[in-house]
Image (cartoon, rainbow, N blue to C red; front, side, top):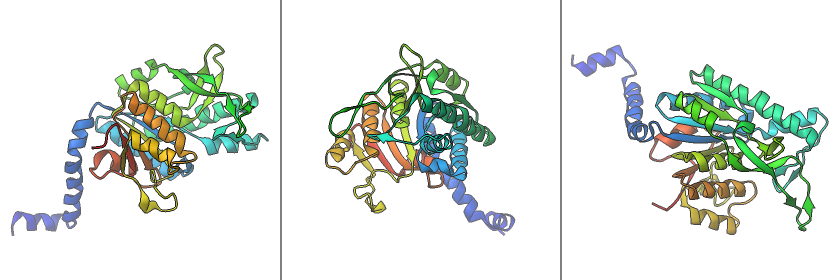
Length: 306
């Protein structure tokens, strides 16, 4: 009996074991390339509504930690906010995709994001064996109120909603130096008043990426990526450059809520981020597949086409 036959008797599923080892070997070049590099992950969409999906994602982030990467997480929470507002008798209203946030509502937004969702994500990460710390966005982002207009060009007051005009990195840098994953809520403190402002999580992640300049900025949501035909998942666009991404907006291929995502991705690339990815959080191990395989998953936007 040769060694392989003996091993097969001891390990009946030897082929499957070898295939698992092959996966690790194939991932080695990416582990080496991204070790000690920062990966910024924005997590949102309906994928956040499924606790099992969220738990799996936080476990995959723990895997990134173990492989020597430095993940940073910015999370959303729109549906949870809408639910909390409804329970308080407040109606959810949106103008140009931005949530109208009254002075009464901003307290609910802040409690939901920084008081419920954020610590819940950190707890899941720790349960998976990772190390995480929750950081309120008000300790990271400085903002100013947004002035919106309706379809006729008339000013519309959308309340305590802002854009990021500055970032404060000390708490994030401290966590990364300790090999702890920062988990950040999408809020800002208003310049001058220090009052909280509600920030679009995609734009918050892009603003942070402009300062951190991670090797990758990854948007995880409930869409496969950029689709040439939104009704056909097979029309997924796998790789484009900055110019092509903006052309897709002009052509109407990218529309609705994807417009601010793509524009913020281009802004991040212009500031020095190497690649931006849009991936589907409803798929198992979507984050690991994007980072550690040649094929990747979803859509990548790069500075220049390869």
